[in-house]
Length: 246
Image 1 (spheres, helix red, strand yellow):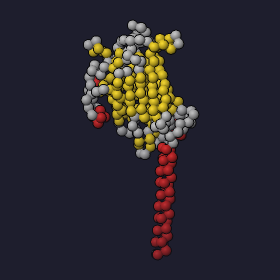
Image 2 (image 1 turned 45 degrees about the vertical axis):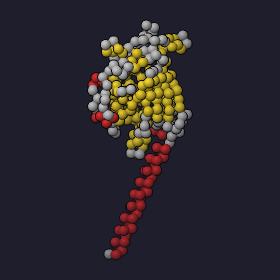
Image 3 (image 1 turned 30 degrees about the vertical axis):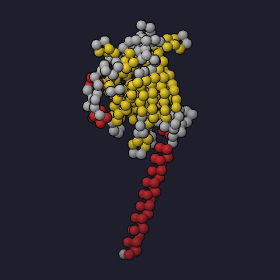
Image 4 (image 1 turned 135 degrees about the horizontal axis):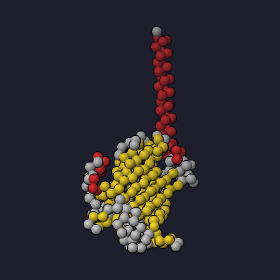
């Protein structure tokens, strides 16, 4: 009887030890994967931006696409962007007084409390949460708020969150906080958005610059994307859109 009890206790201790080792290994794997921050030589950051109206000094919409990937990193997960700044051509203007304004708090935006008339754009995106899941689809809704744009982001997995963009003349700056799910850093890898053309009483929400830029012998609008990354590095890319003198 005593020997049987001792044998049972020994087996239980061994089982608990195996479980502890497995848990430690699982935690270590997550820590290793989430601590990999260095980009490989294969990292790619792509951007495009076009104005829906090519004419200068005119009401316009915007179509923008940002995409990053790193095929050399585990799960193809690139380094995370902490801030992206879009510098539109000088003279481009946003008048946030034109559309209705969403005055809801961040939680209110998450809850869907913004007036429909304050919606200025919609889009889609993707996020990489490797090793949990490589690609998570995102639904993006942009609202006009005081001083800028609020982006309500609904992932197919996880909680809805909000990114806020600040507009200062011809510059839109979006800060991206650390996104952590179950101890794993989530990286936004694609952000595709369409800002609709809005004109009320002759006043446009977005107005193109009064002059075209040039690239070779082409007349274009040139928008600069400035990226700050979580490893301290920076990158600047340019996107062009056709421009026609009014």
